[in-house]
Length: 167
Image 1 (tube, rainbow, N blue to C red):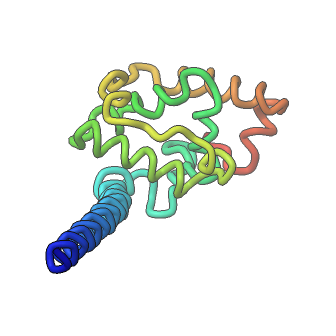
Image 2 (image 1 turned 135 degrees about the horizontal axis):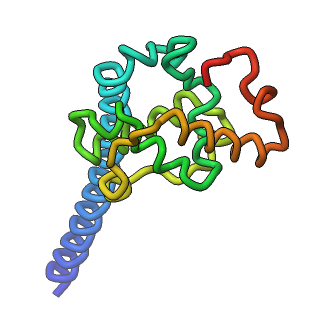
């Protein structure tokens, strides 16, 4: 009887330890996968976006918009999320919807601005797939969104454009 009780207790302890280890292992795998997703998103940015937007997101004045401190502002206005998916570089990239979602999420976090990056709802593969149609008049859509952004912030368009100019 005592040997049976000890065996049951030992079996329960081993089961509990195994469940704990399994939980820790799953948490480790999920954490590692999240880190890998971020690393892969950065690598995808380097391969798919950096050629025009530069490594630091600075773009090219007069041609390619500066992402630094700006990209997250598009998430603050209606149509902004869809715009970032629909710009030709995004919509026509060879990335899967899931990979493009991760790149967009990485870009918002990396280039900000910090308040927008801290509180934004991350893109999902489903959302990207739903809106992944290339825009035909990027400049006009962008101008309308910048008007909404500046109105929301209580600025004039020229004050919002600031010294970067190519927005």
